[in-house]
Length: 466
Ligand SMILES: Cc1ncc(COP(=O)(O)O)c(C=O)c1O
Image 1 (tube, rainbow, N blue to C red):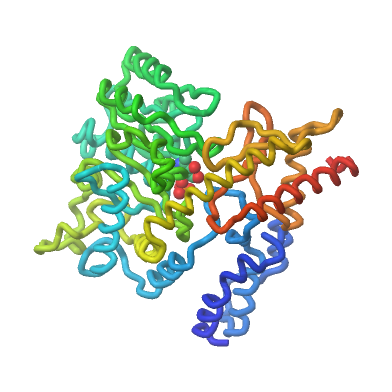
Image 2 (cartoon, helix red, strand yellow; image 1 turned 45 degrees about the vertical axis):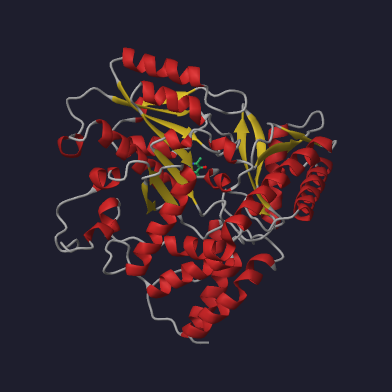
């Protein structure tokens, strides 16, 4: 088969590769996998060898579109989104200037405007980034620029430390952003959350006052719309008041839960978002677009340009009447993939109404899982199901450590390729974190999951394999 034929064959069969696979994955240790595949680079390979390597890649990859893949905050796919991503690769352009990516530029602007119609940033702007972590990082940079524009040239030295505030449930990318921006993670304040994992506004206010009393300059607050472990939503409205009072930038990290805003039924979770200054929204999670498709939306239409534009790029950004369409001036990247195309094409094919139905379907499934676990004599919920994260575990019989047992169940399912589900720790208790992200999943798939989970648990208990 030629490479061209292989490409067509892969596109023809990719759905079946994911959904038709017996197993979610064929698990091997890194050492064993190295032995199974010829990874070494050197001599030229012929097309049969290339075809065989592609088959190996497929065989040993996790099938993230499989219905028993409920492991991470992405999964499934939408076919038009895949088509858009393939098209972006085939046309292979870069998003810095209008002249090299005319269609793609207009498409990115259209997707940003559409997303801003949900965020309520009436005159807003936005840019596709390398992922939710990058969106959070860029939001913090914009916030810093707004507070002290001269830091762009003068740097941080000789100033009061700047402090930023996130909940104790926030994503670790804020820590990375604090390193990257030179703030230091000691100045990233972790604000207490309530029993549901939502930031407590009074605790935020107190933390800001303490920071000021320590001689710091508070500048940034991030609310999370869908926390990674519990799927909790911070109360945006009261946080917006506090941000305004203390002249802080309010960012909403919707990397995980942002797409819930597509549903009128669940949009109340974002109440007050129009008062925020920025919003990170990942289409590669709940909109099932291929990785990566993340957007940072901003309320101030000039802040991206002001915060990141550089003046040593005469070779790239030329003066011309359409220069305002050169998106590269608002991005931290130079060469940049066209991630907007897959989102735009999928949105064209699916439409607002179906996206809303998809979100509502997942939210209903989450409540179904909650009821299923609660009704099952061997399972227990470790936290109320708020959105799309189901935290539960198998009740260990006396004499068996529940953390060890549940970890063993999860690993056994993974090693056998039956299902892939992740875990986290909630107050020291190992919690199986099932996430609903693939819109194709139905109740029967979840029943299959719980059946495998419980029967694996019982086998392990019987064999005392832990
Ligand atoms: C709340 C939250 N923020 C940010 C991120 C980071 O997003 P990405 O994986 O696209 O970098 C995640 C990832 O799961 C997340 O759950």
